[in-house]
Length: 376
Image (cartoon, rainbow, N blue to C red):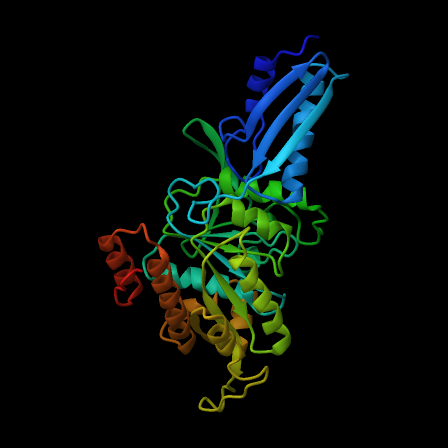
């Protein structure tokens, strides 16, 4: 079969670059298509250096050429990576979602997911429309924390397209890989499969109108982080750490990841979790089990905002296991603690959103119960 450049270019419209939400022709990734007898040369320019995205694009092109045109064709894919300018909005915006906040931790076990769940319900109580994407592919915990372990997302039609409908709990819209696997099933996936699953939960879901989407990232700094950060227009990142030196060392790396040139996501601040322990019978006593003000000092050292401290309280753990986040407890000290943290997050979001109209900034800060701030 004769290889026709125009037909190949048309066929490439059926392939999407992971995380972009557009086909590779529409997004401008395909820069040139050349044919020489039974040889095809395709020049691609990608905005992400993630190896799994480059490999998937190359494999998809080879498969398309061999299946639709000639199984004997020689296919050469030249890939060049050009990082977007720092001020450019990264990734493909999700219609209806105004603010996307990534919640991260340098290491596991510091309470990142618990913090995400409690921030989400606190923002919802303030009157915001909130969604949570559980991006912790290998250890999804949101279905348990919101008491929806047995739920399964259904398919709905939106503008003629089939979309996943997020599960709703406590007025929060949720999607997690945990909804698609059994509780005892281990997710043994390589990076490309994990990224593809996340891509579907982000772009193929009917999120509707959201003021805030919180993304619960896996612990550490890896391929999934890079893919998400460069696939979405992230407003900013929140880093969770305990005061412990081992956790702080990894939290420092987490902040550095967001500030790196290849990601360049504003760090909204650091939350110190398990800051101190207060026994129920001695409410005025504070015991600094993991060290005192370690995350607060780290924030000062890195010149990023300190968003607040959350104590080590048994009821926070119990509430998460029971499926009802502790911040839902009305008139409790924990409700006030999470409210203060959420206000600080909202304040930083408004501060760093240069494109937010002043009237909108005042509206958001008023809903959150914090004073309007002057944006830089």
